[in-house]
Amino acid sequence: MSESSAYRLEDQVGFLLRLANQRHVAIFQAHAPFGLTPTQFAAMVKVAELGACPQNELGRRTKMDVATIKGVVDRLVEKGLVKVAGDPSDRRRKIVALSDAGVAAMPELRRFGAQVSELTLESLSEDERSVLLRLVARLS
Image (cartoon, rainbow, N blue to C red; front, top):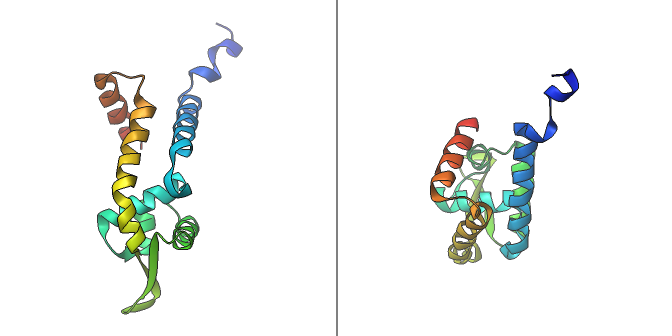
C-alpha cells in the first residue's frame, strides 16, 4: 500500500465526528425554540438542573470557557430566559437563575432536546444508539 493511500480522510474519526456534529446542529437549528443555539440550550438545561448557580460554575458544568459562558448568559438574559444577580457573599461573582419565562419554557425545551436526539439517531437501532452514546462518552 502506498503512503498516499494509507490515510483516507473519510475514514478518520475527526472527520466523521465533524460530519455527525454538523448533521446534529442542522437538525437542532431547524427546530430550535426561542432561537436558541446549542450552547444556550445546554446552559438553560443545566441551570434548570442545578438551580441558581454561579456563572463560573455553570461554565464548568457545561464545559464552556469564561468568555463563552459570559456571552451565552448575556444572550439568554436578552431573551428574557435567565436572570443574573450579584452574589451577596462575593460581589465579583454573578449568580445565574432561570427567569419566570425560562421556568415556563423548560417543558418545551426538554421535549425539544429529546426530539433532536431522536432525529439525530433515527437511522440507528436501539442497540447501535446505546453503543454509540457509550463510546462517544468514553472519548469525551
